[in-house]
Image (tube, rainbow, N blue to C red; front, side, top):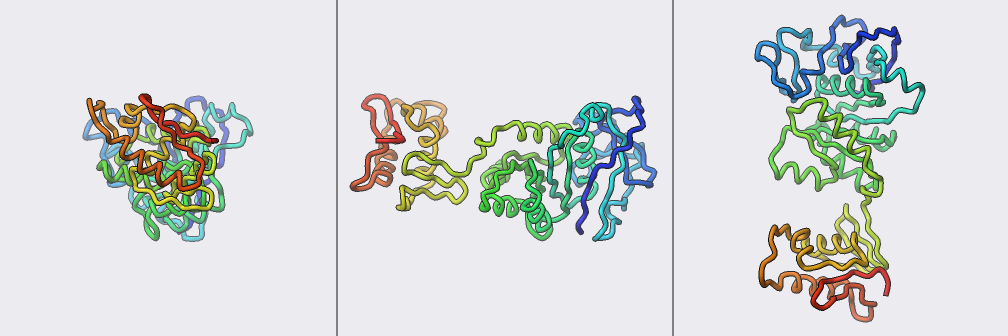
Length: 322
């Protein structure tokens, strides 16, 4: 099913309209849903319930019904949300809006996210499956993406991995009911920039998107270059000029750390803490020296200009030039 959300503004200058309310599709007669129900604040069991889609929804007191217009939209139809113009949106004039692509198969969750982001001035496209989402991501070039992990057609991590292989650096917030540490780590290592588990507060999702958009673009670089060295963070490959360098995972992490800090003196204590995640420095260990010796042998081959230098008694430096 291919459906696209777009914002149509009806400016009636109603100052009593509170920010973060939710309206249903045109003509469905549904009322507003208070933002407080998505804020994570405690509420009584009689007034709220937690849905399987991972969002807090009003219970008996709400007008949310199953089988809403989102689920009944014909496959070729375009879904339109007609909403009042919030006061802070009216003050923005005709400024170009930030584009967000949401890939989420649960229609109820998607409607809430789209409505909230639209209220906050974002232009949102919605794709209900992984294949459609990947196509839209490649064609629309959004400023940020929200991708559910479990999607029909193509799972969310596969979508992200495909984009990263295409050198697409768009920041991605991963949504998932899988909240174990291993699941979060895998989501980030597959190319996600942030990970939010369900159930979540809608205000936290918005805050995380705003944080992703504040990051400078160079923080999402996928290839590092220092002199003749090239490190591909997506493919996990290393090259020196035309020569491929076969690195073990720890050696790759060590070289990445040094390339991000080229021409800087890196002490053994710094390397133990940042590369090996040691919270203390052992009194005596040759761990760094052993790994650095292997890395130098691979990076600085016979006849090559030496790039990794041992500063006796201090640490190591990766020099960008001879």
